Structures are given as structure tokens and as C-alpha cells.
Image 1 (cartoon, rainbow, N blue to C red):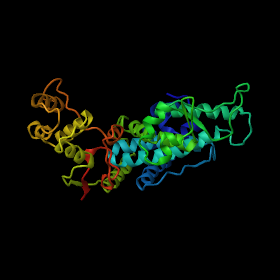
Image 2 (cartoon, helix red, strand yellow):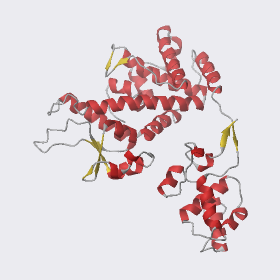
Image 3 (cartoon, rainbow, N blue to C red):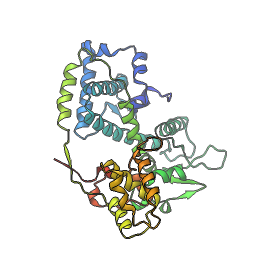
Image 4 (cartoon, one colour):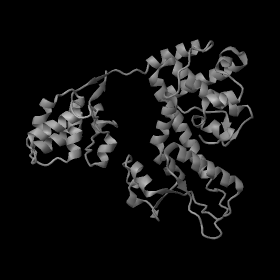
Length: 363
């Protein structure tokens, strides 16, 4: 766990140990439900959830990088922690997802601002102690969220000078494993400045590179939290959230259509051409997940140049979990298929993250 000051915890409350923070401040959850003076913080927590449910980023009482008043810092932290408690008590996963997404967007903007500050925007050459301190925090936060170690390009003279430009360095390997999720030309490595195994990125692109991991980090922090027993004074808020959450429940129907990647794989086999092992794995696990049996799937591979009935049945049974260790294998994600050159996405894919989601339409 990072050792953060109260101002950093207010900006990134998901990095704090919620239970420990409440104890350190001398509060219990029961106090918020019974103390009239603390009720306003529950109101703020409820508002924080409803703003996120409406697809907007919550605006705090914090003014830029400083609190407008001393009381704002703990109030901001408490509102986030109590929002999680309310969400857990409601059990509305749709609200949890929306809350996680908007809190992720909020944290993204704040983190980008933190990285820019640590780049010494004043334009002076010598870094102040303040800039150095902010830089250390920014680097620690990025590493905590994504595991990536970032740094800034330094001049050679005495090691105390740094570029005044908004520039961060990321290992090429870390960049490649994450930039694959972006399709814009600017994200291709050939269009980036690379030197000594490092990719040069602005604060904006550095944060965007870990956007997915930031959202996942917050979502898991909430989802893995323990659900407490109902707390006196919280009932009305929870009941209202349950009603709100039901408005976002989406019912879908499966059209039965196959995604482009699966259609491509079957076309290759029908032509008698060779489909790589990764393509066969994708096709088999997709069809098994759709409820087809090994006997129904096996004939699809008859036209493969290296077809062997015994081997094919053995491999299919292994994937289905009916032989060997008994482990049933899952269909790989769209991101994984992209790395294997097996993705042939069209507009109908509509930003799905797994081929199994293709064809699901809202009722």
C-alpha cells in the first residue's frame, strides 16, 4: 500500500485502505448513520453515485491541486468510502460499473494533471523540491495501478537538470502490450519517439496508456470489498439506489450470428487451407461455449491439410474439459485475438471485448 498524504488520498481515494482510514480518523460506519452532523456526508456519497449513474464526472470541493478548506479533504475521502458501502449494500452491479467508470475518468484527469506538474511547467531548468516530491508520488501511483515504471528524461550535467517538456519514458515492452488496444496511427510504435529501449510519451498519453488498468483497479477495489450488514440510517439511501439501479438493467437477445473472426476461421477450413493452432483454439472454444458438442464441432476440421480424426477428438475433448485435467477452456478475448492476427472486426462488433458477446441485441 502506498504511503500517501491526505491530499493525494482525496484525489485517489481508491488507493487508500478504506477501513483503516476510517479507524485512523476515529469514525465508525455506525456513526455516519446516526450522527445528524455526519448525515451530510452520506448525502454527498449518494450524490456521488447518482452523478456517476448519469454518466457524469463527480465535481468535488477541491479547487485544483489544493483543498478549498481543511474540511474538504476528509469529506471527499469519506464520500467515496461511504459511496462504496452504499453500493455494496444495494447489490446493484450496474451502478457499481457506472460508478467505477466515472471515478476512473475523474482519476485519469487528476493523474494527468499530477504528471504535468511534476514536469516543471514553469519552464525553469532546476527542479524544486516540490516538483521532485510530486514526481515521486506520480511515479508511485502509476506503478501501483499498472505495474509500469515511468521516468523522465534527464540531462547529463550533475543529474539535477531535467527537460522542461511534458515528456515521460516507458519501456518498449510495457508500451507494446498496452498500445495494442488503440487503433489510431499515432499509437503505432513506428510513429513514436523511441530511444534506448524507452518510448517517449506526454502526460496525456502516459495516463491513457494505463486507462484500462486504472478502470479495472477501481472496479476490483470495489467488487472485492466486503459487504457489511445493513447499517441503521443507511436503509433509505440503499432502497433508493436499488430503484435507480433497476432502471439500468438491460435485457438482451442472442441473434445467433457468428462474429467475423469465427466466420473467417470456418471459411479458411472450408477452403481446405491451414488454420493456425490459435485459430483452431478460438473456433473450438467459441462453439463449445455456445453449447455445441465435440461430435458437432469435429467435422469442421475435416478439410484441414493435417486432419487426424483421433487427434482432433482428443484435443476437442481436452478443451471441453471431458478429458485430462477436466479444465474447460474459455474463448480468448478480442484483445488476445488481435495479438494473434485473428481479429477481423467490423462495425457490427460494436466494441465487444469477447467474441461470445457478438450478436447480443438489446430488447
